[in-house]
Structures are given as structure tokens and as C-alpha cells.
Image 1 (tube, rainbow, N blue to C red):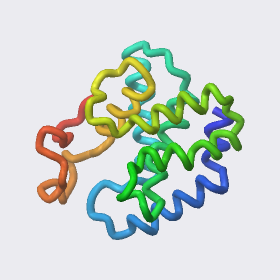
Image 2: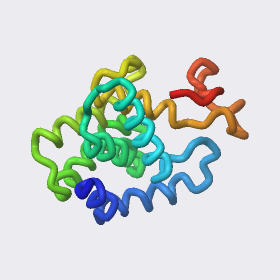
Image 3: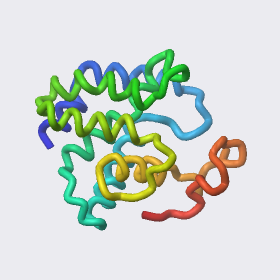
Length: 160
């Protein structure tokens, strides 16, 4: 997990985390912060083990840590946050010694993680997408009634 730890220490990554913290300071719904990223990574790792998908933990953690950093950009509402996240992640992954093949694999997962049609767990994109959705603790949320997620989308029970 050396390269994942490099991501956590990366100057650009830290900058995006700080920007996200400022932008979402008053957000009443689920926040996109390091805690969320680690929840997604851990849930994805559990899914990976349970389904025997055999995806490298470093790839899971890299994708999870980076999947929402595009929300730190002022124009993320105009462009898919997933696409912006992938664009910002490429340099970070290079700086953290991931190969071109690994970078393309992780970026594909980041770009596709917000695809509403991904509900299986056969590859990194799908596992990241499912873990991202499962990471939301709607069952204890004080503002779940005003959340834009449909009742079907909300996690009203703990499940993995």
C-alpha cells in the first residue's frame, strides 16, 4: 500500500481535500471527504473479497480515494464530477508511481463510478460504484427526508 500512502501525502490530493472541506462546510447531506473515501475503499475491499473478484487492494484504494476529488472544482456542476475527478487523478497517480496500464484502469473506474446502471460486482468500476452507494448511512441521517435520492436508492438498512 506504499503508493496509496503516497496519494494520501500528495500535495495536489491534499489541496483537493482541503478545497472539498471548504466547499462542503455547510452541506447538510453526505459529505465528500476522506472519511467517505475510506468508507468506499473498505466496502469495496469487502465486496472484492466476498465475490472473489481478485482486484488489487492498491487499485481499489487508489480509485476510492480519488473518485470524488473533481467535486473540489468550481465547475463540477457543469461537467461530470467523475470526469473531472479522473482528469485530476491522472497526475496524482503518475506522481505516486502507478504504471500507464494501472492509471488507465483506475481512471476508467473513476469515470464510470457514477453510472446508474452499474449494479454488479465483476470489475473495479462496478465494485467502486456499488461501494460508493453503500457507503451512505441513510439509516441514521437526520435530513434523509429532504435528500434528492429516491426511497429506492437510500440505504435504510446496513448491508454489504
